[in-house]
Image (tube, rainbow, N blue to C red; front, top):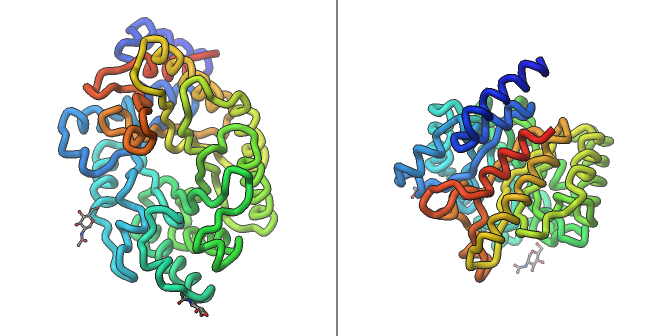
Length: 337
Ligand SMILES: *[C@@H]1O[C@H](CO)[C@@H](O)[C@H](O)[C@H]1NC(C)=O
Ligand SMILES: *[C@@H]1O[C@H](CO)[C@@H](O)[C@H](O)[C@H]1NC(C)=O
C-alpha cells in the first residue's frame, strides 16, 4: 500500500507540480479532504466557481456565512436555509463533503437572542430549537458541524457571551447533545481561533474536552481555525494537535489563511509559502488531523482586507485566480516525508 502510494506520488510529481491538485495530495497523505470556504454571492462568478468545483483541488466546502444564526434564524422560529441548501447542492453535485458552520456563536448572532433577556430555561429551549432544527435539516448530509464557535478568550477564560452569562458552561453540553440527537452520523466539533499551538486558550479546550469526555457528552473533534500571520506561525502545532488526538478526538484546520501586511513583495510570498508548508506538515504528521479547509481560496474573496486594516493576500490564489507560491507550499507540505 505504502509503496503504491509513493509510486503514485512519483508519477504525479513527474507529471509536474504546476498542475498539482490540493485535495489529491491531501488524500495521498492519508487525509479525508482539502477544502475551501465559500460565500454564496461569489457563486455567480463562473471562473471562480469552476475552480471551487474541481474536486481534485477541493474535497470539501464550508458556507462561510449563510449558516450563521443571523441568516438562518433571523426571526425566532423562522428558518431560512436558502444559502446553506445552495452550498450543499453544489458540494453534492461536485462529489465534495460539506462542513456545517456554525450553531452557537456570540457573533453574527440574530439580535433577538441577546435582546430578549431570556431566562436560562428559555435560552436552553432556544439553543435546542436552533441547533436541533439546522442540524436535523441536513441530517445525513453534512460531514461535520462546528457546534460551538469561539467560546473562549485568548487567556483561556470563558467568553462572556449571552450563552455563558445566562447558562454557564452547561451550554456546551446542551448544544452537543441536541446536535447528536438531530444527526447521529455527523461529527461534532468545537471551533476557535488562536488554538493552533500550545497556549492558554488551547489548554482551556483541552481541559473542556477532557471534561466532556468524562461526562460522556458527545464530542468528535476540535477545529483550529488557523487565521495566521506570515512569519508568525506557532512552532507547537504538531505537539498541540497530538495531545488532542491522544484525548480521542479528531482535529481539523477549519479556516486557514495566512495574511501579510500589504503591499505584497516576493519575499513575503516566499515566507508565506514556507508558512503554509509548515502548517500542512504539522497536520500531516498527526494521524487524527483529518483535513484542512482554507477560508476561501482566492484573495478576491478573502475576509482579511475588510477586517484587518492594511493586511491581505492571505490565500493560495491571487485576486486574478492565479496560483501563488503558497499553493506550492501546500503541495510541498503534503508530499514531505
Ligand atoms: C434567505 O437567506 C438568503 C441568503 O442566504 C437571502 O438572500 C434571502 O433574502 C433570505 N430570504 C428571506 C425570506 O429572508
Ligand atoms: C431581565 O430579566 C430579569 C429577570 O427576569 C429582570 O430582573 C431584568 O430587569 C430584565 N432586564 C431587562 C433589561 O429587561
